[in-house]
Amino acid sequence: YRTDEDLNFEREHTLLEKTKREKAEIELDLLKGKILDAAEVEKLQANMIITFRSRILSMGSKCAPKLLGQKSIPVITEIINIEAHEALNELKQIPAEMLGDNCDDNE
Image (cartoon, rainbow, N blue to C red; front, side, top):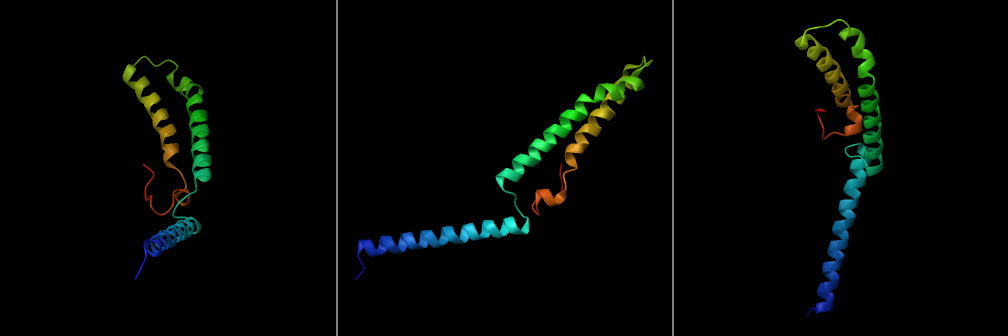
């Protein structure tokens, strides 16, 4: 005959073992590089923002010589769009190993 206390202990033990297994799976995924810990993600995001900010701030000096003397709005728009797309493409060039196996493309 099993008491409520026995059943509660078994339930708690089962929950503990499940939690231990889940923790071990996460640790294994971290070791295999399948996932990143929060600090790594924050560092990656900070670096991306700094790089993007620098690229955006440099657009004026990069575009100015190309725009000098241009009178055609479509040509001016195209020059600016090319620079903007190049800046955005830098965000896509995150090393695959930093994203883990679950992210096959960086779009």
